[in-house]
Each structure stands twice: as structure tokens, then as C-alpha cells.
Image (cartoon, rainbow, N blue to C red; front, side, top):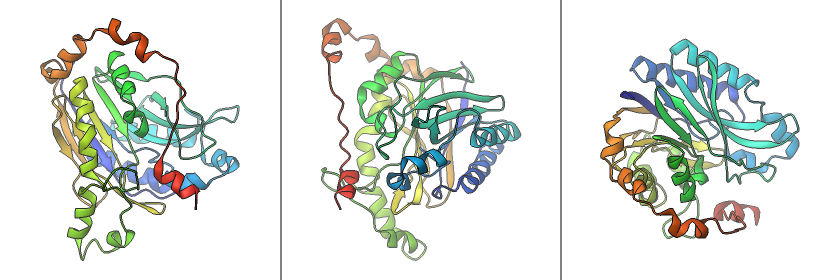
Length: 319
């Protein structure tokens, strides 16, 4: 395993406009490759858009979704990856030949599809089915995993992915700046986004406060630290349908330190070089080796009925 330069990106996607979103993905992939990155990661549903899908019927979802790997978006991603010699991770809605729908995130390189993960805990549209397996794959000699947004909030998913061998977990999101039962949560007024050139300070205070980055810092670094892995977090910036998102795409090392982060209001990327030696130097490596599964095997394996309670989405549906 050798050092690996990778990038994480943020951009303002357009709902259902795959051509536009793929054009931005190409521009940022080109920029990353020219700066020496071998991998670039984009946010959840970066190809299709995300939040607008909460209002779509099954027929509309089937029109939006694609077969993987034979759909046009995967073909286009492969062309971009080949053109700039860079692996690309991006998200979209998937359908299978039986008409089932999934939230998918893919890794594509110049040879085609490398890996696909189906979100384990989807909620944005009632017609989505959950994925039922973890995803581990090789990328430039590193073992990688994928967990999409809410998947990372169920901490067992992160540890399971690590125990399957992951050194890097890609964590694509569309998150923050939505209401919740926790103190300080809430939407950010889209007027602040429209006025960002005249008053960037007010927008930054909202983005970095408890509605946004401060909440992220409560838990995201611990996923990397506790497990001794690199966490690659990607999140959109700007309007996603009627909701404003704050970006903060970042890479966190096995010590739980932020080593790269997008800190502008623009479509942008941040990159860093992953250091293999950190994987065994970090405390998380020692902690995972010190586990005693005989103590909690039967506890963690108890029967349980999964419940998804997304506060902002439920409130939206109650209107």
C-alpha cells in the first residue's frame, strides 16, 4: 500500500438535470486530476439531485432512476474517468429489471464500474428499497468501503465495514441545515444564499453553527478516530430543491483530524495525500484489535425491528 492523493468535492446540483450535474462532475474531476489526485468523491445523488425526490411517484422515480452499470450516467462517468485518468465516486437513483428502486453510490474508473453500494437506510422516497449488504473494494491498493448518509449514523455499519477490511470509507451525504429534535437545528434561510456576495458573514455563521458544521463535528471525526480509518465526507453546497446545504466536504484522517476541507461557497474540491502508516499508528487500530466479541455478540445480534424517524421529513409530510 502506497500514499494516495484523493479529493472530495462540493457543488450545487440541479434537480433531475443529469447533463448539468455530470458537466460539473467532469469539471471538478479534471481539476482534481490536474492537481495529482487519483480519486475524487462527490455527494449522495450528485448525478440526479436528491431532496426533490421526496415528492415523486413511483413512475416518476422509475423514469429518473437508471440501470447500473448499463445506464447512460455510468457510461458517461466512465468516459470522464478515462479522459482524466481518475476514479470517480458519485450517486444516483438505481432501478433493476424488476422495477425495484434503490439509492446507489458508485465508484467508476477508466475500465468501468468498480463498485456499487445501495443505501442501507433510505428514506427520501417511500418507493426506495434498502440495500442489504456492505461494500468493500480495492482502489489503488487501498481497501475501501461506502456508507451513504444515514448509514453512517448507525454506528454498527461503520464498525462492520472496518471489520471487513476498509481503510477508507467514502461517506457521501446530503445533510445539515434541517430541523431536528436536537437543540440548535433548523433550516437556513435561502435568502442568505442569494445575498452571499453582499453578506457572507451571516451565511457563514449559519453554516458553521449548530444547524451545520458544529453538529457534524459532534460525530463525524469519531467515526474515523474510533475505527482508525480515513473518512471521506462529501456534501452539496447551495440549494438542493428548496433546502439550503452548507457543503463542508472534508477528509478526516485516522487520528480524527481534518486534513482537507472545502471552505468556500463555490463549487470546489479539497484534496490530501493518504498516508498508510497512520492506519496502524492511530488508536482506532489498537481499539479494534482489543475487541472481545464474546461479550456482546448475542447483544448486538438480538432481533430488532428497524425504525427510521427523520424529523424534518415527517414534519414536511404532516403539512
